[in-house]
Each structure stands twice: as structure tokens, then as C-alpha cells.
Length: 366
Image 1 (tube, one colour):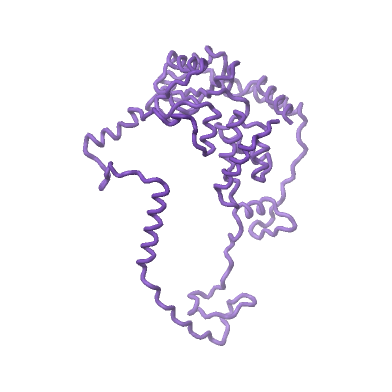
Image 2 (cartoon, rainbow, N blue to C red; image 1 turned 60 degrees about the horizontal axis):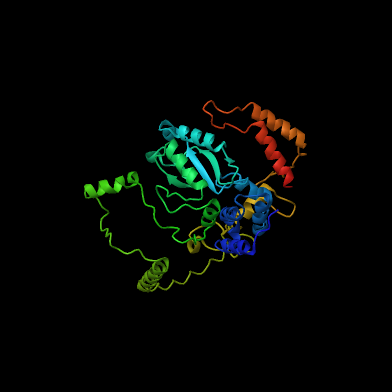
């Protein structure tokens, strides 16, 4: 099991401090990126670390880590090469690019080369149809690729180079990228240098310039203020608005309450007139006085100490006995056998060998 450095723990505390005290679990996504930046994937130790610092259980952390594809659950190469094979890119040759890379590298979907440099994957959409076929390296774009240009990119990566993406800043490794996604600046020299937008992206701007279309009152020479300067200006504007407000008029004295009760006051409350309150209904405490997380937890799993008036008849779920490992293996192997890969070579599901390997890895890490 990996031992996370004190620097990682300090960064974890910094991430958690970005969120309100009663919303600390919102820090889970950047924390998962943080542990991935140290190990290259989200290991069982990383899941345990996130659960520990946030006070969650490992099942809650694992549910999030397995939902998002950006969190890798097995060791991943320095460079994640994703080839789009969705409709538009596929028509333009994306499948040929993927097949060529798979044959050249000797790996399939979500597999890593023996030198640990490249992990290859199918991507169902990279949101760049106007640049197709596209592939990304650690989510930086290489547009309009063909089999030969894609081979050139991966060979440069394997030889230690860092080819320049079509759009965006300079390439970084998966670990370096995960540091950025955790919310920390990339400290490499020139990390955000170079790059630039693609021509299809600029097409709308060029049409606007050609036809003289602009936002009313827009001045392109207006300097962009820093966050501190913007906050200062906002505070000054707020202070001016407060100062310009007219003084509030004195409130009229309430009329004397009648001797007779309205009959709507709650127990222990003095009687109030409809004229004084504008309503004959008694005051009631807001039902959402508790934290939403606390209310949700109480509704789902009430106990003798927790009254749940808004969820009558709620029952506590009772877990059954877990299946024996051999039963799980048999069920998974049967499911994989009936879910063969699609005819175009895309992985429609893991084969039995992959299922067996995953089970062995999980058992070894217990």
C-alpha cells in the first residue's frame, strides 16, 4: 500500500479548505485527481486516503471514482492516448487511426505498453467534430490526424519528446495533468506557453469581423483586471450603493392586540391578530433547518434516535450474505461470454480473462 507524502496531505487539507465546513465532501473530485497525481491512478490506497481525510467510507469514494472515466483504476502510462471513434470521426477515419495504433503498440483498449509510456483507449466523443478525426494525449488535442501522423505522435512520446498539440498548451504527463485538475498551478517553465485556437473555432469570430457584428459598447482594448482588482471594484460599488440608499422610515407602532384569541396560535404562543401578521396561520419553523446531507441520511436510514416525520414507514435496508468469490467469478465470466466484442473491433465488454485478472488484482490488494 502506498504511503502518501506529507506534501500530498498538506495539499489535501488545502483542497478541503476551499469548501464550506459542512460541504467538505464536495472536495472529493479534486482529491481523487490529487491521489492520481502521485500514483498515476486511483489505487485502493488512494480511495482509502480520500475516505480518511473526508470522513467518508470507502464505498462512497469508490462509487465516485468508478463513475468518471478520468479516474483510472489500474496503473496507467505517462501518456493517455484517446482516439475518437464516434460517428463523425469514424466516418473520417478514426477507426483506422485506432486500429493502426493498436497494432503498432501491441495493446488494445485501456491497455498500456510494456515500457509504461502509452495507454491507448477508444473515446466515444471528444467534442471536436469540426476537427475530426481527432485524438487527445492527456486530453490535449491533435486535430485532423491520420494513421501516419498519429504514429508519429506516439513514437515521439516513446522517445522522450513532447509533440506540440494542435490546440492548447504544452503536453504534460498524466501525473502532471492530475495536479492541474486538482486545482494547483503547473510549475513547469513555459507550461502554458505556445498553443493557440484552431481555425474552425475562430470561424465565428472572422464572420463577425467580416460583417461588422459586435457586442454593443464592446471595447477590445479594455484591460482584463486581476481577481483582486475585480473584488476591490465590486466592494467599492457595493459600498456606494449602500451609501446611496435612503434611510428607512420608522416602523409604525403595532396596534394593541385584542383580548380574544384568534384560536390559531400554537401551544404556549400569545394570540396574534390577523391585522398584525397579515395571516391567521401560526408561525412554523422552516422544515429544512438541517443540512440537506443530514436530512437525506436520516430519511434513508432512520434509527430509534432519529425521528423522520417526512418519511413514514421507511425501512432500513438489510444487506444479504455476500456471494462466494467462485460464484462471483462464474457469474462475471458468464456475462462476459454472452457479451462478445462488436464486429467493428470495439470493446463491447471485458472478456473472461480481463474479468479474472481484475478479480485477482482486487483480492491481492485487500
